[in-house]
Length: 153
Picture: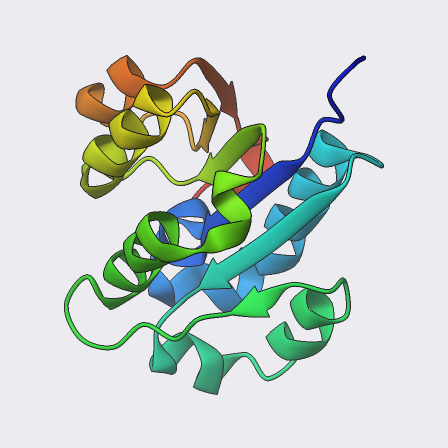
């Protein structure tokens, strides 16, 4: 019997967009890139960014939540990273997933990704070219690149 592919997607919007100041101009392109990558596979999507990006971009709620995504707020230095790492370590649905798709290049995710690999969950890291940490790259089963139009200028 074949196992159904279930993707758990984590999106660090600040990293994927090239900084919190670019979330308002790039988040839609990141959303479209993620949707193309996942296609019709069953998935669970969680995204995070800080309060400044949310304040600058009120349409972010409609674009991301409209697709069934869950928002976890980040606050303070590395707030979005810490909020998403907490999800990776404690979300029950992730342990029932076959793959984690992490949209971030941040080194803070290297250890949580290694923990998931040890549990048999495959990991795909999606990052902007030039922003993927070596630590995270080494832990990923697969690396994909966001399109250039998503990158910071």
